[in-house]
Image 1 (cartoon, rainbow, N blue to C red):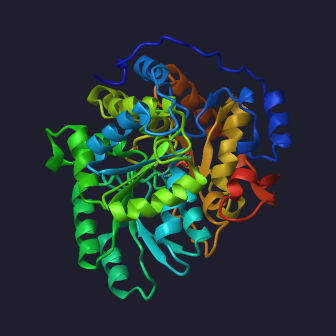
Image 2 (image 1 turned 90 degrees about the horizontal axis):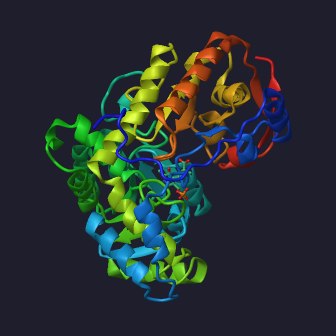
Image 3 (image 1 turned 180 degrees about the vertical axis):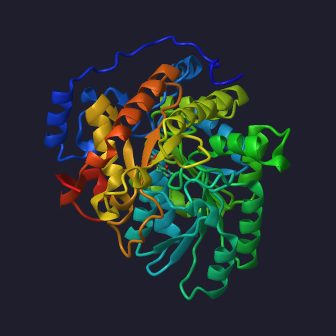
Length: 454
Ligand code: F0G
């Protein structure tokens, strides 16, 4: 099965909004040059995120219809719990309304003011939730991730030398080490099982729990299957399980590899910690058998988690990302290489060298892509990462083209590539941007900006 033969066919269709350049220019001005503020009906192809934007399968809809909406102990929860236990091997399961709710609940219980959390790369909400607790995050991705064009297969790995050094010398308390699979921030890059084995060993030596941010655990398994000679012949489920087996707990946004439009979970081994998390969940999220979700969401996720591990689905999914990556590369557009699991990351810093990092080249490219062709994407660079406490300038200024699951066809992706190809021809004319309003680690969601000639 390759990317030219999707392992599904279309049963329901939705029209794509059609806009003119004038409509889009006006929308940008009104939105303060922030694509998060542009209404979706003015977006043609929406590659802002792969989160909650996928198409559910007929089986997911069918199970959602059969759902049990009981407040406590619903059968839908039992199916959800059974699936999460089977995939993660973790006995304690708490549903939450989305990934960041799980982050907030876990960090409220285990993280204290002044703590330090090492990670390969903490996602922006994860970082924000840790900072809200007064903790610091230290991202220590593998050195190969620093060069966007280096063809290293596992750029999502954590830097083990740095981890060892931090665990040995840190004067701050370390409540957990967090491994994000795949590494979204670093380009959707996979983490190799042997890297997690080594990280887990270090954590164990120092008596520190290791947690997995599992938002894209299935895509990680699919990429490991393709790239890790040691994992050849294994199933995505076995590869995913090997990683879960090494961890004390997992945070999951089911809006990604849960194949659902909403939802998440916290899974862990310790009953004692579960009881403490349950208390916070009941007070702030919902009873422990629904966690802010409807029964129908729990059923859609239970089915979706299984579908995400289907080898045919993963081959198609990863093939789509590879196809877009190859099309852009052929047009001379520099992209983070090799492609990751959920998105193509364009090296906007390299494409727009005349725009300095503090004038947001990734953001400038995102705005131009919308202006040109009605395509919405997202900056992953200085705008996103440098609004928080002690900001560390990112290694590269990227534009993320995130592919919703099972939504767009190859022809859509070719349209995206062609639009970027046209922009490349006049890249030097693109302006930089300056923030007029908005601050803090999540400023990219709400900021208003204005163009400044580069
Ligand atoms: N962890 C990772 C690795 C993520 O990519 C995200 C969300 C979250 C946690 C938070 O989950 O959205 O369900 O609360 N990422 C989305 C994105 C928003 O566009 O990459 P959530």
